[in-house]
Figure 1 (tube, helix red, strand yellow):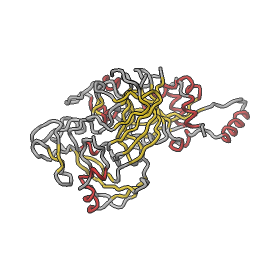
Figure 2 (figure 1 turned 90 degrees about the vertical axis):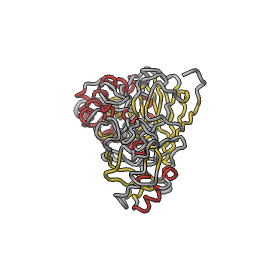
Figure 3 (figure 1 turned 120 degrees about the horizontal axis):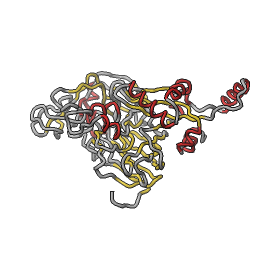
Figure 4 (figure 1 turned 120 degrees about the vertical axis):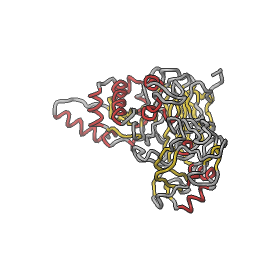
Length: 436
């Protein structure tokens, strides 16, 4: 991008067309240490029923971070996440044959006139309401197998799933109930008025399903990870990649790890100049694994602080979760625990114990086994350990947790502080876990 003075704060209310493309312009620059404030659009289901959006999601236009160069790391502190949607809808999906070319997320096609990525209009409510502008055909590439409409209380603490009459009331004014941003192109998923589950209560804990940096090749946003990205390999549409191209380009910004929430710190690889920080796919809540394939997509306002860490080259994201989100075995030892451990060590002739801090390394792949292997390999390389050592430490001082089924995991463990020091992130980890 041409030279512009870096801003203290960059406000974001524009979106991609569903593709993360390093050739497209970025917003900013934001200064190193500055802030990104974004009004995000709902992720999965709205874009999934809007075939003109080419990526299955609708994420924010990336932001250029001053001083970020290929091979660096951008440290993202999630300062706040606020849900603005009053209601949303979600559920398990089924793709509609004849309405896409190889991949319903990123190659929608009208089943009657054959237009690729057709523009749409809404006619009425229900699962056949999304119509091709060219010919009027029912054009949504997806429908629900089991779905629900959920409304949130004013303080955004709980959601309750609604009966048919209430779901249809919301469907008639979907943009308002979902607070979809002005520049968003998506059709509101509440238009479908699903109501298979009624009266269920769910606690809210919002997080970002998408947060990261721009890949080095054009990749549909929902496919910027090893599991969904796998479907790009040899695909028949415009965004096909080889396995080598995918692995080199992806930044795994599409994690759906529910620990990527307010208070967490995410370290992201820089694969294009300026990094290109983007976000979206805010979820009001989600259990580990997102096992239904989807959860409660919402609009919201997010504040991030970004820092450039020079010379730390990552293969994928590294997370420092909020302490209460850490697996029990990976939580920092208390002073009392350290004292007890040292006494036990001394009893056996050992004069000192390790000083450790928690770290979570993201791994992804076409299935959970491949994702776990990827996470272990990344952790071993990052921490200068053998894979068997990482496996042992993750077993006795951490855990492997599912971010998204079928293929995103976190490898979490307590690592010696000298490894953090070598990486230049010791102060960062101490601030996250010891500054209390």
